[in-house]
Length: 402
Image (cartoon, rainbow, N blue to C red):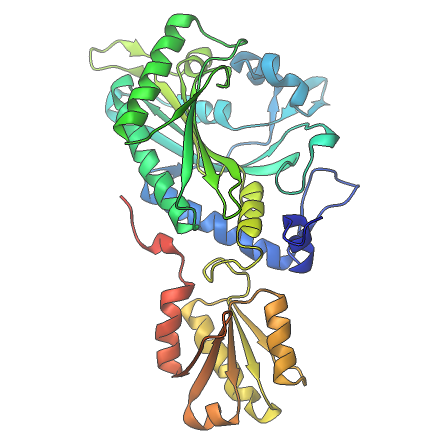
């Protein structure tokens, strides 16, 4: 395996592992869980800014719902099934039918639309063992699953809004370039050709309105509707499919979703299926390989290692660490009886982007020496160090898009 393979980096950086007792699943270590939560909280903040309301739906759902939605017929072989009290259930492979159930609770009016739901959905898919590949292809993973239920004349605006959100998020993670493709009707699909003609035309029009150039991928759409796929380009020139926008006239009708239109008649909403990352696990794997383990400071599990030189400076170093933690920094204290070069080496092995050195000279001057990954060094007062770190450790979601 290549030294920058995410599985190698996951072991080296003590982030996660996998084992035969749960194939296709991830054992997240404490440092890996920090990274996972940082990504999750960043996406949560961005989705909230974009007007999405977070929900949570069950992982175990009656097979009857999947039969009604059409997933069982098209996707059943890839679903984990179980039985309880002689009733068949499935581990959900996606959250869309569950979100429709929330929409159906209560009476909905055209004035309520669009309604936007988001969920970090724990999903399971029975992938063949030969297809499993670390974080990139797993059986158990978390989808940043989002759905908009809206009127047909709201589709273009909603797609454009989501494209702005996608561009912002990808740029924040360091992906300035991405390709877009429109996947059209597959051979096996739900709905008649008239429905598909309308859906494909609407999605293409919305993509153009959002200023997107896109290729056509014939017959690659979901069984219930066409989709826009967003492929990220990493620093090695590889493409990764992450974001999707799917336009769906079929599922809301199958599941009985309805709202009261302006003329008082019942109408079926259009459903937009959204994902920015697709899978949190897979996206973390992409990040690790893209940055070769050296994540941007705002993402790093340990953003700053505070190291003393001698034991006389330990209390000063500890107070410095507390000051950085009050700022919101993730701080690792290295107060071992080791020489400073060893501490710096160990910090670099963990891919910590900043090492703050607190020796006798710094203690007497009320300063700290910040040593960066590239060799850059700043000797600053504690207050100036805090001001410097404010610019580097905070997630970019602090800046609003909408």
